[in-house]
Image 1 (cartoon, rainbow, N blue to C red):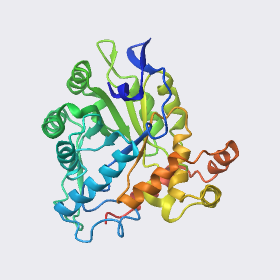
Image 2: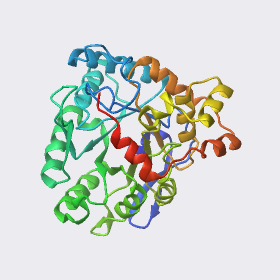
Image 3: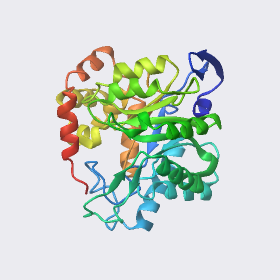
Image 4: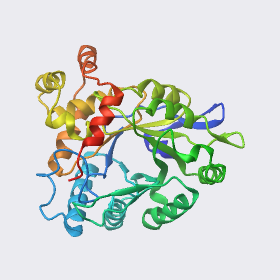
Length: 337
């Protein structure tokens, strides 16, 4: 199970789902995961990648850069890595790294539903295409396991939104439930201003009296915390909760609010570390994902595992929160580059 890394566990029965609750404490590094969205393809919407990635962004160059970041993350104690079928060659890069290094203690979460269609071009008109269908699930599960095999312990629907046909697709839900019954934790990720509604709706989906999903990965950061209450609710019900885009796609690094700047100065770290620390301070967050583009960005991000924020600082960091609709409109305007 996805939670096995976290120490000695005790099974707890709650309505419609059996989960594992940890009886030993987890460190902040234990709760930190490395996302490869910004390293697995030449173009992405994250700000601050231009000077961090290799100049030519060729497949060999990005593979080497990914391996370097993975090496440093592993040395620091990170044992969770998050990828997706649409992250270019991220699954392939991760698979080659695992094969070459021989690590068997790395937990992998991946996602299906988007396909990478950017043809390794910076100027592609479309970089990824979304399809929540039974056919795509079966195809991409085969592709993911063909590369990563049993290393995948969590497989997620990529970017579930209110209009997804998944909610009423009984054959697809049955196939996901079958995967969950095989021992792979099945979850979903969310995006958009309606994240909270999607979390509550999807978490209630059942097949034959058993919940389809037992994990959720949502965007949460100090600019967009609107899903927090819903995540706390499902965490209490036994779900594993992962936080993504904790740096707001780089916005909190390149143009941090004054409250973030002040906390960074007080702790002697970068604004990215404060954003990570704020996410780690959420008691319902099992895993906080970071998505560096280089070894230097990784080291700076990981400073967030050492910055213990006070109650007053956390209260101040809640002030810059934006209206969810405005936040997601701004995110949609970010350019792939």
